[in-house]
Length: 403
Image 1 (cartoon, rainbow, N blue to C red):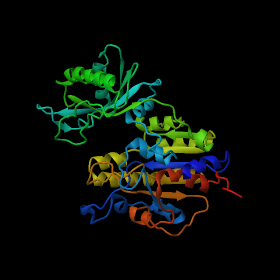
Image 2 (cartoon, one colour):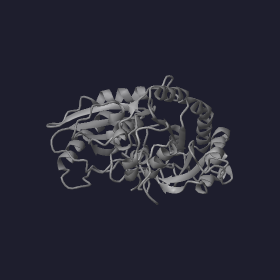
Image 3 (cartoon, one colour):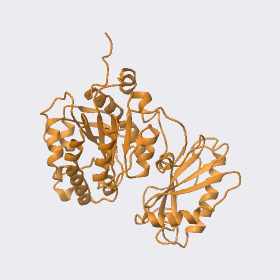
Image 4 (cartoon, rainbow, N blue to C red):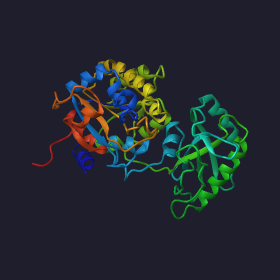
């Protein structure tokens, strides 16, 4: 309700906002760190200075106990109800590489994986193969044809690719084939909803043919499919909140979710965090009043269970904070789309720390940007889709409600 009301009260003027997302930043205590989380272990003088001058809290991307995917996690902090505006990862992956999806296209994310001789998954990401090898594998799959359905296979990044099926009567009601862990075989292609028979048949034929092509490859001799999604149009951030938004993200998946929200894409040169900071500054100079900046590697280190690398990625982001401040945004919000605890090597349901700097805040409650201090911060604990109203209010972009 809060984001719906904020949409009604949104003003087309006010301060500028930077939403900087450290993907998967939230964590749980690490025994090797003496019970500290990577955020607590990291040396973050710049984030801590912002925390002292701003306000902390924590958000629940979807709800208590609910583990979000990357799509719902981001849409939530963009101000969308993640249950109402549900989109699969496949559509986001396709949009992220600027594939021109048509209404009714069925898209799925591909993970190239490593299988043993019995077809059991040894590595769900095939050792995070290079993008160059991904392009070669996709080229081998492109000739696959299915009667009555057009098939498009496109590379994304590293072990990730996507497949798009175009035809009449397709449904997104298909279960993922990714078992979500090693030591299991890829799951059978089955319907998750009535009316998916044509889609199941097309996907099954694609997987059969792709498996024959990949079986002698190394290390990527198999594939897993995730996030089946039909393409539909969403209201944009301009429609909802009268914003002129932009996005700076290195990974196609996150460019995809930003595209779905109507954000103009800004490329980063060089393709690293420093380049992203410069791109955010350019977006602001171009008149964009809301900029989303994405930092991926806090998430991938969590998925790999590499708590030391997660600390290093947090410290890398901290070193970029002075540059973000120099851009000149009126309000800076730093958070994550979900938590990715290193001991779990997966997304989790744990609340995500939030820092808002700028605007009239209840400052002085916190001294560090950590999960522990966020849990006791001035902003409290709130649903993820309530973050947008908080940012808009801090920037003076919400009218008063009622007389």
